[in-house]
Image (cartoon, rainbow over all chains, first blue to last red; front, side):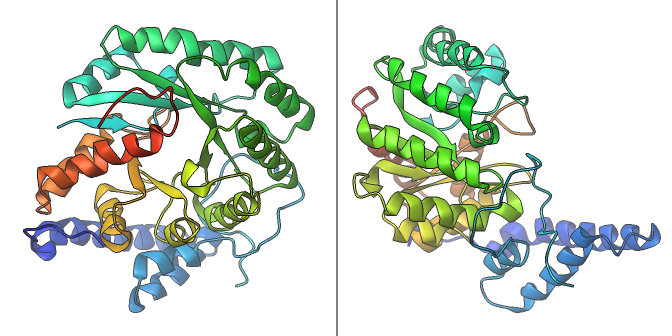
Length: 91
Length: 268
């Protein structure tokens, strides 16, 4: 564990930043809905991951919700890029 | 402040970045071999790249009195072609004697494919046979969890490898425990979007301690910030950390890991 000798108020430090990011997420959801793209698996994965905000270890659980949970290597890489959500996640 | 940049792809940065980093307190920069943004067409492309990492780039950094070190490998994004990958691995021992080489890296996985895994295994074998430090790239985004588990398990199962000589990079909240519990070091990469922000990286330090963690910018040709490490130090100051703790995280920790290679000459 690591702690500062003089601990700062984390709400004071980070509230405005978190508030701005929350509004950005809300605006993103409005935008996607307006554009009729809510069926995109990445959007669905994001909506699903939002449920993790009601858990403990929220950051870890959001990352887990967006991850490929399988354990075996895939047959071959068909792309180099990752997209941020596991495309095969059951809906 | 003084700091080490343990992971930066300076071949894709401007000379101005060297000046800026030195001005901010950088005392050494370490450059793992990586993907150029396109696939090289032959082993000769890697020969030229390894010469760049061990000759040209150290000279460019030296103009700013900045020690430059490198890690060598073929990155996992080019590991799908087993023939090419093996040609590159066979060439690496010719470069291991060069005075700025720290070890084998950044090896690892990208899409967690069978061929990437085979080449990772062969890189680990190369490191074991030549008693080299290992620096590991873990996959991006949705592939990171699975890839980190595969990588850590593979290395743990090789009894020739001392885990304290392995650094698993690009860890996040869902992978840090797996790495630390395995006795390895972890790298927190400070990216604006796809990896860790400074506040999250500091949260991880607060949860897991600073003993075997470092921070890096991994700046390259993509969206990245060459001063991300000193910016994170500033974030620690904002949270109330003193200069000694900041020096431990940003200077003494990386020096402790890197000094396991006798080529690394910076002293804490």
